[in-house]
Image (cartoon, rainbow over all chains, first blue to last red; front, side, top):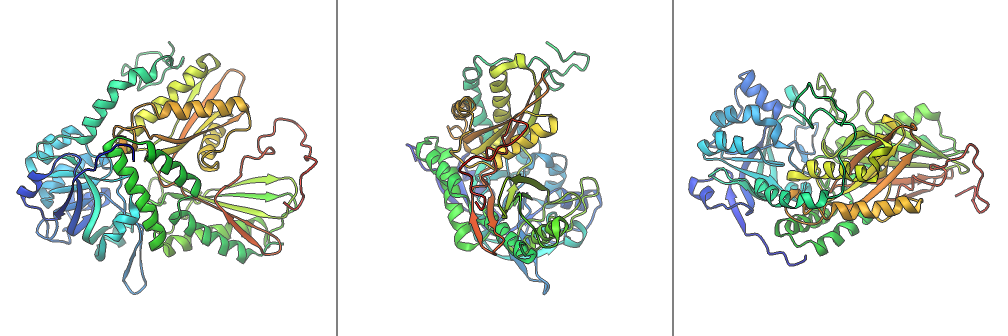
Length: 226
Length: 320
């Protein structure tokens, strides 16, 4: 592994204290203990737009919202088989995240790719929450190992297995990486800024396409040629 | 005549292997990338992935929770006969997909695009895709399953001859940089590039270049092979690694496939086969033998033929 230094590793409860969260630094590697629940567009819509009662006590049972659908099946006798567990990209859930935090008291949002700086400033910081990103992506087998058992699956009939609310008992479940801290700083944005500094050199000599596309200009009266 | 129940059983085994066992060629490629990676965070990510592949095999659980959208590439020899014919074959592959989704288990990813109906088995309208290829001679059938994941990393653009190689590089970089940020493309990946064809075939070529060629394989046209190596190098010089962290491992390999296109155009597509490059292959013979492998060996000289007629090479073994 080249000359890379190792990030520090930390165990964290899924109902973390503000002090424990304040300890975390961008790039720290976190392993979780306690209950964790999956919630993505299906759960958000049902809870926030259809005002369904959330079938858990939040945040006392869990303050950890995982943007995830596990590779899992429900047996005929109602027991569960859980294989791999990985996250889905979180940026799509911006429209619900503020209301969800208010409703659920979530302190840990876990997913893929982080959310925008705007989301961190507007929703995460006021709620004392941070974002943990999965690693890879994705270390599905390792995360699956960290699930001691499936405690419950809610709303699977209404939403299907992929969108259901899975309640997982995490035991040293990880790795996750701290992507945002209590001040709303973002690891991805920090890395992007470093990489962007190098891009002009990489693009040197390449030429823009002769036929443009919308999106490369914001002015819809523009022509695409030249 | 190849028995249909043997095809279904083999297909179920392939679904399991694809989801759980990272192909050796990709693993070797990733290990090589890990050996030279010096970004702290990127290194940590690659190390975690290597550990993850081991855990998946030990536990016999899927390597990634997003088990992609299972699909089938089927190749047959000219003399191949399937019990029950092509309809029975497609039914067997659909059954195997549904059974393995529950059995492995895989994530039931496939839903209706508008109504979001989920059959919880990865089968539905047009799912799984089943695509066909043929080879001269032979009585075997190759079953290839690919579980390509991800919603990111793919793009298409109509380029023109005047865009040239520099235009190709520009669009390639645009795709890697855009989808590499925050690791949305789940890199380092096998990057497949389709050039030419028509819009649809260009996408198909790029996808097949990513999914049906192994790491280290080169296009049979030496000048294209050279461009592949150049693009691999270019991608790894961006300064971006796994998860979009500072690093140098973006591309495990760059594979280009071409098709003849309209004289005025130079269509280009880019596809990324992710850290979970799931593919598994089996050849089923008429006598009931089954040979498992991870190299689809899709792009034979016959698949890349340019001429009207095809003459069988002298040394071609009919039973191969």
